[in-house]
Amino acid sequence: MDQLNVTYITLDGHVDVNKYRYVYFFIMFIAYILIICSNSIIVYLIWFHQNLHEPMYIFIAALSVNSVLFSTNIYPKLLVDFLSEKQIISYSACLFQFQVFYTLGCSEFLLLSAMAYDRYVSICKPLQYHTVMTKTTVSIFLFFAWLVPAFHILVLTTLSSEAKLCDLTLKGIFCNNPIYKLQCVTSRVITIFGVVCLIDLSILPMLFIVFTYSRIFTVTYQSSREVRRKAAQTCLPHLLVLISFSILLGYDVTIARIESNFPKTARLIMTLQIILYHPLFNPLIYGLKMKEISKHLKRLFCSAKMI
Figure 1: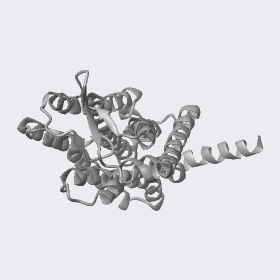
Figure 2 (figure 1 turned 180 degrees about the horizontal axis):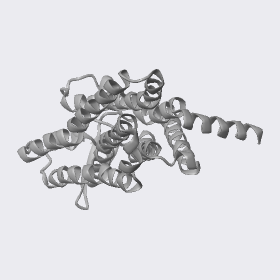
Figure 3 (figure 1 turned 180 degrees about the vertical axis):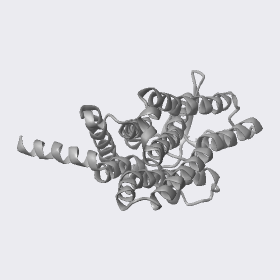
């Protein structure tokens, strides 16, 4: 559909939306509210309590902000689509959603890498910790965690905006990797730079995280029980979040590669994994597993009950 020089894409990933539109809307609306509230509480606790103004907690707050922005990029449009007769989006808006989706998704890996380095210095080089992990260092890590993915993905978005489209039906419920299948010809430049992005923003950070935690486990294994306990308390939540996010990435890559005859319902379920579990998983893990955050969380709810 082309009106006033605006190209519209049909989002064809929905299943029985006319029949179950209100069920879909209710479930995803509740999920969105939970994501916003749970992550905002984590950010509030870290911002409000002085003893949480440490690099590890600042990175956790950054991850929570990421989850809120990541979800806000997807959920409002998704909720509108559930209540609409036609599920469409302009190609320019689709590219913007693509840009934000992968910028925030890739920044998650870089933030987890920064957290892994923070834990490495804290546990393996405790005497140097306050010299290395200064406010300036943390600010630089945060700056590049968002800036580097933004510029990487901007190249892909710009190249995609110039590509000619031969298909206006996207097999998905939001704009991610499948937008490449709308293009008449798969650009070699996009393919090559896509691989570069995958290596720079996913594989290398993952290898760095694995190497860092290997060093941490080697050092703690040779240390006292108290050191091992402290390492487990602070590292385990990060590893759980990393595993959760890696599964998210796996789903996204798989969806982009599966054939068009793959069952539509199965494709929808896999797509929902990407936007549903991880943003809810982050605050749950950090709220329950991080001792200091959990303590303030209990106080917050106990004081709320007394009002």
